[in-house]
Length: 455
Image (cartoon, rainbow, N blue to C red; front, side, top):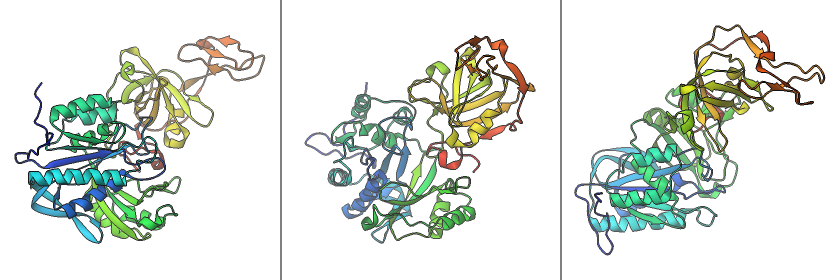
C-alpha cells in the first residue's frame, strides 16, 4: 500500500508542495474542568504570535456520543494553518484583537512549519488537564485533509487507536501524544470530517479569574436573541424553562450560540447580556447533523452504535417505572427490536404510549451494552386502522395486573407467578393518537449530534 512522505521526517523538515497544515487535537479536558475548544483558542492566539495564519474556520467535531470513556460532549478540534491568501473574515477575538480566517492559503516556509508544530504541541501540553486521570492529550499534524473514513468510523463506531495510528502513518501525518494514544482517534477525525453537512457555534469564554464561580448570563436576553435570530437553535427549553447556552461545569465557556448559519451567531452575540467576555471564537461544527446514525440492520446494532430503523409496532407499549415506555417493532427480515422512550425526553414517551399494533414507525437512537434502542427520535409513518389495543389480563387470585413476558410470550402475575397465553389479553379502546409526523425530545434532552427539528 502506498505511503505518503511524512510531514516532518526524523531529523529533517519537508515542506508540502502547495499544501497548508492541518492540526487536530483531542483529550485535553476532564470531568473536573478544562475545555478542548479553549485549548484550540489558545492555539489561535499562539499562531498569531508565531506568524502563521488561520485558513478557513476552526472545527468543533462531535464524536460517537455513546462511548463510555468520553468526557462530556466528546468533541475534538481541528484548524488549518498556512500563509493566508484571498479574502479574510473575522471569526473571533482574543486579547481584544480580531482573529482572521483567510479563504485560501499556501504552504508556509518548512522551518516555520516545524517551529509552529513544536509550539502548538507545547501549548496543548501546558493548557491540557494532564494532571487528571484519563486525560492524555494528542495532536495530529498533516499537510492534507485525512480520508473521510477516519471521521465516519469515529462518529458511528468504536475505534481502536492502533488502527488509526496505522492509517496516520500511511498518510504521512505527524503524531504527538502524552499518555495513551486514545486522543489520536478524535484529533484525526476532526481533520477528516468532510464538513458538508454543518452548523456553527459561537463560543464566548469567561475571564480566567471568574472560572469556578457562578456564571452570569441573562436568560431573558437569550430567549430574545433566539426570537430575533431564527437561525439560532437549542438556546433554551420552553418546556423546562432551562437555558441551554451555558454549561453547568467549571469550564472556561461562558455561553455558546448554535446556529444554522454563521451570520446568525455573529449577530446574536451582541444581544446576550452576561458577565464580561474574555474572548470568543466561531466554530464550524457537525452538531445537529445526525451523522452518528447509521442505517444498520437490527443484527448490526452492536453496543455503542446509533441507528435509524424503520419498522412496524408488534405489541402494545408497556409503561415502565419512572414514566419510561417500552415497545417492540418488527424491522426488515422479521427481526424484532425493543425500543425505549425515556421520561426525560418528555415528548417521546407521550407519543409512544399511544402506539398500537400495526403502526408503521421510523425510530432512531443508540444502544448501550444491553440490546435495544434508546430513542432519540420517533416518526409516525402510517397509523394502523385498529381501534383497540391489547391489555394484560388481571390475575383472579392476586387481583394484580399481569406483566408482559415479551412479544408473543404471554403474561405473568408479579405476585403468584401464574402465567397466561398471549390470547388472554383483553382489548381496550386505543387512546387518542398523535398525527403522522416527526417527534423529537424536548430541547434540554437532545444530544449535540441529534437531528435538528421543531423547537
